[in-house]
Amino acid sequence: MALVTTRAIVLKSIRWGEADRILTFFSLRLGKVRGIARGARRMKSRFGGMLEPFSSVNLTLFEKRRDGLASVSHADILEPFFAVRECLDRISAASRMVALVEGVTADRDPGPPIFHVLLDGLRSLVRTDDPGLLTLIFQMRVLGQSGFRPQLDHCVTCERDVGRTCMFSPAAGGLLCAACDRRCRDDGVPMSPGSVAFLRRARRMPFAVSMRLKAAGRVRHELEEMIDTYARTVVGKRLPERNLLAVEP
Image (cartoon, rainbow, N blue to C red; front, side, top):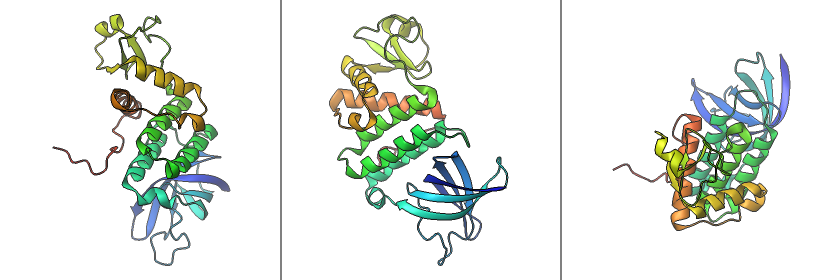
């Protein structure tokens, strides 16, 4: 049993019982951790609005067992990111960010680089005029840091140059040349030279610098399809929709 204080970002919050909340955090010291906040939904709760999704908090947890729920003892709000929750596009982008982090990380496995990229991503989300593209670049960065970096330098199967006509294979985790694509049963995503060049360039840049890149038209469409499909394959489920107002036909 121990008290642990760490900076953390709220990934998920669900109601539990009559007044409690069960929360999933990604923390600097502990990685992904789940905890219960007793009485968090009461009007006069000591937590107030400090445990809303996307919030950055200084968190104190009481750990009873490493394999069980921790008890949230105290939380101080550091960055509430109110502006993120005031815009549907930003809510959608932030939801995709935290869902990916939750999906690719193991419980109680610290990952300071992922924590800092998530924090930087939320900060940038407040300022950007293109939340969708920011989220795509964020997803690429997190996939790379969590051990799922896609192979973009050559064909993932034969290791030859992919040429100007290639596909991205979510199952194989990289680009396929035309010859290997014909032998592959995976439903790949077509990638133009412009899209491949964008991904290679973004990968080489520091995260803060890569967020200045722009993509439109065919390149933007291919990037969205490729990254969405790959992230879904890695996580094992669909991420939140890019457009929360989208209605299924």
